[in-house]
Length: 447
Ligand code: GLN
Image 1 (tube, helix red, strand yellow):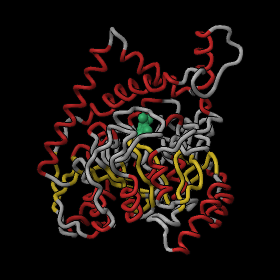
Image 2: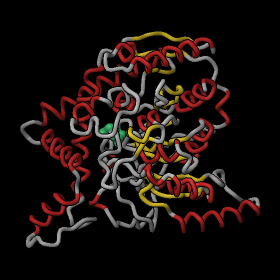
Image 3: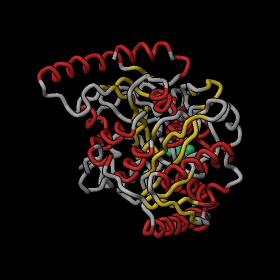
């Protein structure tokens, strides 16, 4: 813990932490040490972990990096936090992220942009940018993020870490600040596949507080790491042919494909012709869900409240106008529009139909293959400020990650070394629902 405190101190310029829990982490470390001495410590004893600032921890502030929730102290812990604590992990602090997890560069945070440790003029990725940089720069051993459309995988890719988004419903969302509830999933950012496996084992499994969590048994992921065997891998042809794809990422992926083959796996190129519909469907559905989820921040029940309003309506309006940032407002407006009576059929319902089509197509592919391979991101980490003025450019950068989110399947981002400028490159693997084990063991033997 002392090591990480020192690291955090000397890396403040990265802006990864919204708050370091000096006192509670030190108290926990002392208690865990005692348990270790008595031989009663849990599975994660000694794992120093950071949590994204949209995950509740009893008696600690949680803000979703928004002015709206500044100063809000959570009265209870998220299930994932309770499970970490029960296994004696030490929670070192809450990590910066895009406001309400909306973004792909960590530039929409009320607490400022997070810088990539590989090149501080570049973004860390988002929305779990703080989580990725904290692991990248050794400010904690591992971190929790949330992934609605790529927010664990994309920053992990930009920071050279391993980012796992489990199957929708594998991990409880209780106590996690909602963005788009039919997409949101907690995920892990780690520097080894082994850590991802142990963490998933602790975090996954049924929870009375969240009815969308699967009752399925949780495998011993760690034990299964080296029992992978030969896999049938499908490469989504259109993703590698995409004009948007950076040539260095492409050649790193082509090399990786050769390596998979040399390890005995079969690799086949398959066509996925719905690529153009992924980003539009994702943004119609997630903004719709967000507009509904964020209606609770009304200046009355939670968070920021305007002090000048003289009637209820003005209080709502002023509190929301002051509390939310620009990107969050854009999404609430867009989501409200696509759900409005005159446009519901044309946008929201249509997007749901498209989502089902995409899901069916992916499920059909996964009958014949164990694993699907694609890039995580079209480009290496871009410059801070480069894309922030153009939301459409920013949204298009999610093209490869939203596929697993729309379909609910598990996906992992794994590092492929650096490009000539020293920027991390990466690869994405996806599998059937609840087959995280395949992703973990394949990544483990590959790396
Ligand atoms: N960049 C995507 C978005 O802005 C993903 C965010 C996320 O997964 N939370 O919606």
